[in-house]
Amino acid sequence: MTRKPDLSFWQIFNMCFGFLGIQFGFALQNANVSRIFQTLGAVVGSIPALWIAAPLTGLIVQPIIGHYSDRTWSRMGRRRPYFLAGAILATLALLFMPNAPVLWVAAGLLWIMDASFNVSMEPFRAFVGDQLPTHQRPLGFSMQSVFIGVGAVVASALPWLLARLGVSNVAPAGMIPDTVVYSFYAGAATLLGAVLWTVLSTREYPPAQLHDFDEVQESPAVIDASGAWRMGLLLLIPGIAGALAVGYYHLAHDLYLLAGMLGVFGSLFMWLSFNHGRNRGMLGQVMSDLYGMPRAMRRLAWVQFFSWFALFAMWIYTTPAVTMVQFGSTDTQSVAYNAGANWVGVLFGAYNGFAALAALLIPFMVRIIGLRWSHLVNLMLGGLGLISLLLIRDPDWLLLSMVGVGFAWASILSLPYALLSDNLPTGKMGVYMGIFNFFIVIPQLLAASVLGLLLRVFFHDQPMYALVLGGISLGVAGLFTLRVHEPG
Image (cartoon, rainbow, N blue to C red):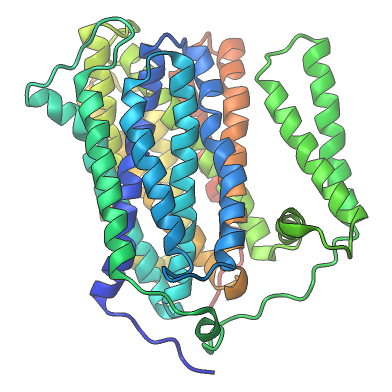
């Protein structure tokens, strides 16, 4: 065996630069899609259901891409073909999204756009594990976080900046303002250019050479999934009971999604158990890896679950919350609403900017108090930041709230992966990174299913309280971090 060579700063820079473009497009989606939906006629209560496409595509796409990228080798390499294919599809979706003529077209484009982002994004995480020796991986993930912050700052604030430059920020009923349209065009160009930079400036280790490095962890033996039926029953029975309850008590139809998700995963675990020892193909391999994932990954799943529930609540509801509370308007054609929507873009850019700075400070925090306590502190800061939006009335002071959110965002993008990466075998780095995404996607599906109902039943359709629930969820995620074993 040989030692994996260190890479220079510029080599790491090149391999991470594509994340700038991916995050540019992702930030445009997060900051503007609720605005596009409302402009095309969506009411606040229906917005979570329209966002379902985004996490659902990640749930399906990322483990599949991870599974196949682990087994791919071509003239372009192992991961880079997926970077490029996803970037081309995402570029087309970004060009079409602000020109969607009706609501259902915009919802379909969100599905395509998010699937394309996932095709590119999942292999980038595994790319760091492939290319860098263990002691350089924190630098790689930190550099990704910096590019995420820079791309998101510019993208989120772009409609506001264009409005300051004189571009029209209002439009007739059912039309998207020019500030948003031109921002998406800029995002398409940036995404494709940044990913092409990484594809053309990097090389990958062939599979044989990668497995010859001395720090490669061996893939585990074949996982015994004969007992997976127990997990299947624990999921299938509540799924069936939940679907019957929704129909019998005439509950919100959004809850069918949650019941269906439980039923599907329960059925898959039952199938996995009863077909134990047979050739089950790609689906069986992914489900087997899910069932047999490392203990550290199981405990981090709860941290991710509550973290991403909060983030999804923020992405869905910040625009309707801030435009209603701090700007006093729900009329999508009004000057006040569109000024507030632009300010949300500035706030999203601000928290990503603070995250880029936090990414430089977090390594020093880790040295002093460790990975777990650092993540706890950062998530608590984010929770307080979200809850404070309820109390602040001056829009300018909302920037202070974004400081805490920025620290939480930087931590979420780096510290769970630092806790996890050394526990993953190189031969399954891609598929396990894809499976880890389940615990990002499932809470988003839960948020899409229940947040609208919670607001209607308990908070009189006041979107600001979704952000309060998000803040509480970040605090819970921080407490769960203390259960995770921290490497020496």
